[in-house]
Length: 280
Length: 71
Ligand SMILES: [Zn+2]
Image (cartoon, rainbow over all chains, first blue to last red; front, side, top):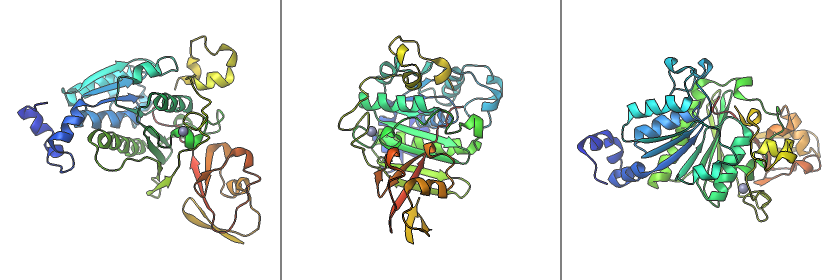
């Protein structure tokens, strides 16, 4: 890849960075990253990856921009209300950095499309807001051998872990989605807007570290923080031999839309995912 | 009396034979389903929360489910 004068200028702060350099920047420009969810986490992830020059950014989201999103979803602006989030995000990325190819999926990630969509990417970022999809991303990425970053936020807190083939996965740590309503969502309990930026930029940094091969990824460690105290903690976690998807005797061998699988066992396999359950 | 670490902070258990389930309540976790529990680096199955008793110097981590992100 030969950089133009403009590109050398645009990426100069990466290029002069000793661990990145021209080579690292080339890897970033060749990188293909899928962002699941163009919301609180997906917004900063998409903006920073676009600014960094990630060559291909895929964004999947089935929602439109709502006025209540703008408090933290910084890729969407007031005139974007009612616009598809993927379209709004694509427009901003194109303005920020024309080097980036944006692929949009105005859809929900489901058991039936997940593997087909993620296969084209080097890395997947979980920016979703519900447990069934978080577990679906985990299971799909583990099965496809794709690295991914899990992210979750609530109120003043955030957590993230990076999962590579063979390292502790999200299911190793959390086993299965909690019963419905056991854990409040951001729409029920609220979230400090800047928390989304704090966690999303950590996820974006992990992507750039992965693409450039710089540093140690957040694998086998769950990072948690509480912005009220600004205490950050990484908790060592181990690959769980009893994990249902990556353990010694996996019981999850094909993807299912999780809540549907538990609530509506009979209809499993008939295809249409239960939108009301998976929808945000 | 035993001294344990909960999420990196020291806690003194005044009574003997405190179970993981009791510790969850002592720490005001609203619902045991909100956390995944690690004891000395190993995950504890939900089924044995009440029969797993803590001892001196145990390190316990409550890993909270956090589902937010998009909306
Ligand atoms: Zn696992």
